[in-house]
Length: 151
View 1 (cartoon, rainbow, N blue to C red):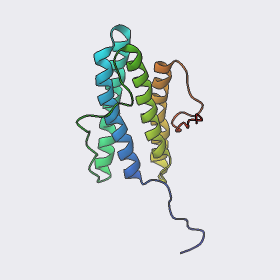
View 2 (tube, rainbow, N blue to C red; view 1 turned 60 degrees about the vertical axis):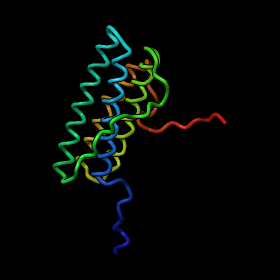
View 3 (cartoon, one colour; view 1 turned 135 degrees about the vertical axis):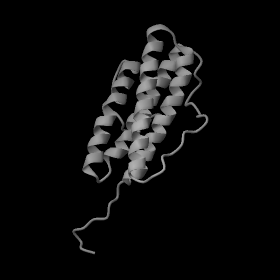
C-alpha cells in the first residue's frame, strides 16, 4: 500500500446515518413523552419539533435504503435520561434530545463522502437551534460531548 494512501478512520456512511436515524427515533419517542406533559405554546412547540424529527427520520430512512442498507428500527420504548414528571423536566428532556440528535449528526460530518459531510453539517443546525430554544442558552460547540469536571 502506498504510504500516502490512508485508510479511512472515521465512521462509515451507513453507520453514521444509522446513528443519526437512531437518535431521530429516540427524539420522536421523547417528544411523545414531552407532549403529554406540556400545554399551550410549549405544547405547540413540542408538536412542531416532534413533526420535524419524524420528517428527518423519514429522510434518513430513504437515504439508507438508497445506499442499500436496512434502516435501524425504532425501539418500542427508550430509557429517559432522568425522571420526566412535569413541564420543567419535559423542557429539560427536549433540550437533551436535541443535544443527542445534534451529536449524532456530528458523526455524519466525520464521514469521507463530501456530500454526506455537508448533509450532516446542515442537519446539525436545526436540532442545535431547537436545543437553544428549549434551554434558553447555547453551548460553545453544539454536538460535541460535554465532560463533567466534577470529581
